[in-house]
Amino acid sequence: MRVVIQRVRNASVTIAGKECSRIDAGLLLLVAFEDSDSADDIEWLCNKIVNLRIFADHEDKMNLSVMDVGGEILSVSQFTLFASTKKGNRPSYIRSAKPEIAIPLYDHFNIRLGEIIGKKIQTGIFGAMMDVVLVNDGPVTIVIDTRNKE
Image 1 (cartoon, rainbow, N blue to C red):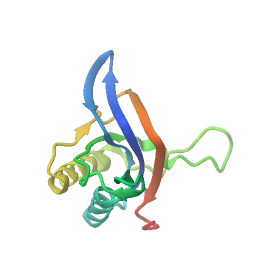
Image 2: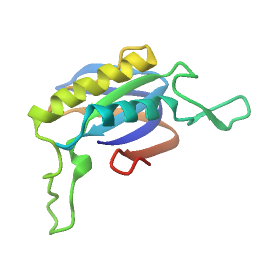
Image 3: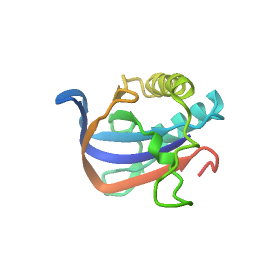
Image 4: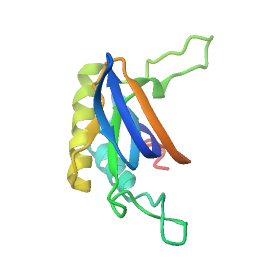
């Protein structure tokens, strides 16, 4: 699994001109899956995300997690995170899981994330053409890959 985590003031997803999800302050997650991803990867990543201390405390230091600040989470599937540009100029997405594997993983990821944080996770729609709008806070952007555990 690979995730791009963005600390946001707000974010939303619009599909075909209709807003389907919106959050205020919290995290926008862009998430991609590989065929070999497992429930263990989901568990590790969910715990890492909700405990990342990337929100400011009273001294304006990044010491608080999304749970500490009562933030929201918007999760958007994005298979292009596994793009390979090694050969030629047209990216290859061969590493990205096919929908029959990725959809159940994405659903499990969002359910587990919601269980841990104690809030419903807002989402995009898997496979849809989405307009994702965000106001990046900082900006703070972090990339995590479960293969590297960093």
